[in-house]
Length: 344
Ligand SMILES: NC(=O)c1ccc[n+]([C@@H]2O[C@H](COP(=O)([O-])OP(=O)(O)OC[C@H]3O[C@@H](n4cnc5c(N)ncnc54)[C@H](O)[C@@H]3O)[C@@H](O)[C@H]2O)c1
Image 1: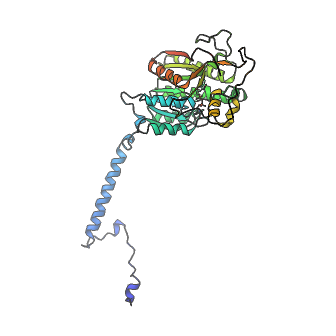
Image 2: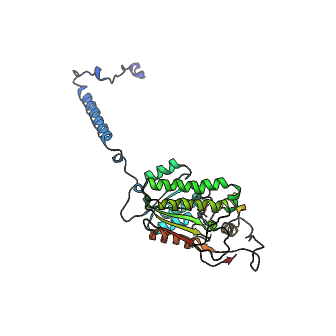
Image 3: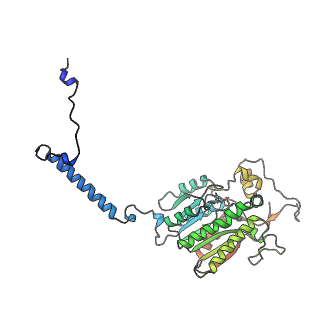
C-alpha cells in the first residue's frame, strides 16, 4: 500500500511574481531572483534597441523593393493572361526581374504556376493578386516595389463584349490606365510599354494600315484604347513627365510558346465573343468539336475574313525590343503585325 501522505500532494501556497514580495533575505532564493532580474533587464534592453531602430532595419527588405545594379525590374500587368504570360516568360528568360499583377478575372493561375515552376529562384518572379481599378492597392504595390518599367497588358479585350458593356471597357481600359500612369508618376517609374490595338484605327479605307493612318475607332474597345493612348501621350507632353513610352498597336495575335508550356485559355463564358486564337486552342484540345471560321461576305475567294496574324512569340519579342530601345523623353508608336493578310 502506498503511504497515504503521498497519495495527495501537499498544496503549495500560490507563488507571487510581484517584485514587492521578493524576499532577498532568503539565501536559497537569491540566485533565482537575480537571474529573473537579469532576464527582465535583457528583455527591456532588447525592446529599447528594437524600438529605436528605423522600421526598415527591423525587417529584411524584399529583393523586389530594391533597385539592383544590372537588374531591370518590370511590372507586367495582366501577366496571367495570354499575351502577358508569354511576355513574362520571355522577360524571365532574358534575365529581367518580373512582378506580375493580375486580378485573375480573365487570365488563369495555371500560367502563373508554370512561370513560378520555371523560375523558382528568389528575386526572379513575384505574383501579386490585385485589381488595377483599386488606386490604393496600385499605389501600395508601387510603394513596396522598385520598378524600372511597366508593360501594361491588363485589359478586357473583346470587341463584341465592349458593345454590350461599354462602361466596363472604359473603366477597365481607360480609367485603369490612368491609375497605372498616376502611380508611375508618383513613384518615379519612367518607362511604359503600352498594349494597344489596331481596333483604334476603325475601318480605314486605305490599306495597309500604317502608324500614320488616322484613328477613328468604331467600338467601345477601340475607343477606350484610343483614349488611354491619348492620356499617355498628353502626359508625355507635359514638362514633368520625362517618360520613355512605347505604344504598340497589335493586330491579331495567335500561337503559343514553341515548348507548349503556355497558351490561351479563354473562359467558357467568353467563347461566344469568338476570338479565333482562343477557338484554335479549344479545338486542338477537343473542348469544341472543330474550328468554325465565321464570316461569309468579305470580298475574298471564300467570303471569310483576311487578317494579319502575328505569332505571340514575335509579338513579345517586339515588346522586349521596345523596352530595350525606349528612350527618356521620347515616344515610339508601332503597329505590330506581319504586314500580310492570311485566311484561316
Ligand atoms: N489578343 C489579341 O489578339 C490582342 C490584340 C490587340 C491588343 N491586345 C491587347 O493585349 C492585351 C492583353 O490581351 P490578352 O489577349 O492577353 O488578353 P487576356 O484576357 O488573355 O489577358 C488580360 C489579363 O488582364 C487581366 N486583367 C483584366 N482586368 C484587370 C484588372 N482590372 N486588374 C488586374 N488584371 C486585370 C486579366 O485577368 C487577364 O489575365 C490587352 O490590353 C489587349 O487589349 C490583344
